[in-house]
Image: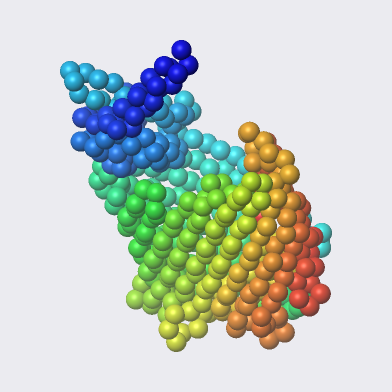
Length: 416
């Protein structure tokens, strides 16, 4: 009868909530590459405590977030009066080695259209401690090759070392107002070694040393700007912190990310100049229904009395970076910037992030400009945009307007 069944359900529910199962053992299903000890170190769920399904869900999401698995789940069984939690993690069928390709297109409708090809190679679980070798290649407006070998020093992967090589060739443009007066080709190469520590779900900290070279070759512009094309020696100590809790790299609806970098250029380590440079970037996203607000903050400059040299200034401008200014139009020794972005999701998709439209309000200052004719003081800007995720990558179309009559129309296929 309905009344009897309701009473039965009430008694059953009360029993479950009053005495959840106490976990006597945690096991892992069979895995070919990933070591169970590494996953065990990521669990907040503990033996000897009652099962907390909300906490276990967070553990499973953290494990899935490593990128090693197609599916992560669990079962709870009883054997000889003991409660055994079994975590079943199905390794990715395409691993442990990965090769990815991508394309990017951009156009500011002011005579600047760029093409960018990308390739990334990852070899995961190169040894029992979970070492990873990663190489990234860019070809197009920016040519770059970066390779790093990430080697944990313990089974918990809490401490690691990471030797790396970074080679780059990119344009370095100088503007007088909105007019580009010179274009250099900047070439740089760095060899470095980092030691770091990470806390799953929170972030990663690194401290390392590096040595390198940087040179500038005049491509277009007055010959009197060519100067010396001799390579500039670089070297020093760098420190960095990274945490990323955003739910999506390009269309975040919740979470936050924070990065802080400091570089001390030191003649004792081969550098030509002595100075210290810092750069910090923060992004947070909040959503309610189809409405999303994003807050972005960025700052940078010199620490101490030494000014930043001309070859290591901040380049700023472009979409969501004082929109309306051309990419790299603002060049200076310090940076302070903030923005608020509103996005409305017009179309939701179970596979892609959907289609968005919105606007941004931006303000900032680029201090110590390379040329005294460049924009200084407190700058305001904004944009309106539409964006969507597609099978070939994200697409952005935006109009940016900034103080002083600066306007730019942007089209991006790929990350802005």
